[in-house]
Image (cartoon, rainbow, N blue to C red; front, side, top):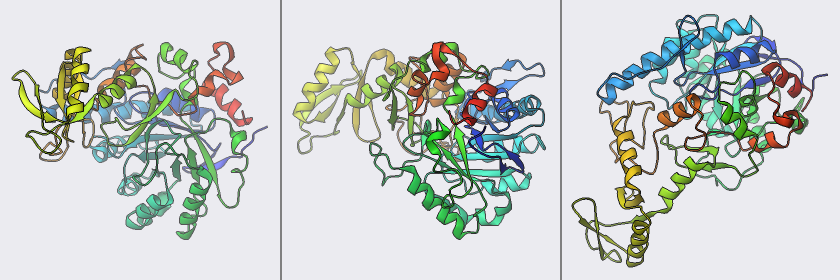
Length: 465
């Protein structure tokens, strides 16, 4: 007996269960196809997906370009071909059941070019496009051009109103749904605004009710809202189901599908998930996108925390309290610190953090020589995976730069996300996860290390558990 009834999504009646579109290979054609075959909406990531050859074998991208622009162009070409290969795989696995969506980030490199490239060659294979991480004003226009539905990701009714008034009213027939992603509970990048406190989460119900009110004003009463972030058991959301105030509701699962037989993540990653405790997922501001994001608080995150903690304000000349000289760099050039900061800096250097790196905010961070070399090399190796990157100062504009100094407090997101999906390293790489991931350890469904198939997981979710 299902706790929810089928809902019209992307032109078909399916279970209102949506696979979250986790990027860089974590949700792929196999997982999306399996989810769709189970009767829901499967979502594969179009964010630098893995390219599969005609035999289904992974073909890694090996950069040949010497410049950022050259590598950027290589990545875009690869992203288009890889997205097409994953769409074909998803369609084949689904066997005509369910719906298949592609997920992209509006702030990823050349997102419009990638979407046009993939959708122009996958007619009938992809039914919807989900997109967040920014304000994707042209999403509806692109989706409508290829006859697929679009699903913008927002975290407030105000954001959707802006998108609707500026653009989406022109392509309303292709608006398949609006994804509300809870900015405090979702994994990956989070849509916290400057007015919201990252450590004071808000109840999602009134926020979603406000979103529905905005949609109803626009005549979108029939368009589903997809609740994303913090969704584990459907029984926890009974008051949302068949709720007249909220209207048609679907639920997106991002974290639970990580632990399935079809999931491409490593066995080490799956085992790690089964050990997490409440509070092990950390909402942070380290991402080079400029957005908050949520990831497992492993050694990778702890090292980034250390960089931020070993940070002091400096001046290039004596000014006010910044009157204490301090030599930095190979040439021992003087900068000026507050006297107490000099003592802290000397302690860090004694502890082995002898290299100083300047940030765009006129601060110094202290790292080991090895970490300093790694940071500088990663900045040099930038392949332009984002529309703009605060870590490397790359921008896909004609100038090729943000115009700001590179920020060594951040990291190369492409490098670490490729590493964690293609290796067993789950401690020194970035591991995105939703804040409910600790439930793997207590949910009896996963007792004794049980890892279900996608079909088994969907069947379990439909019971309410």
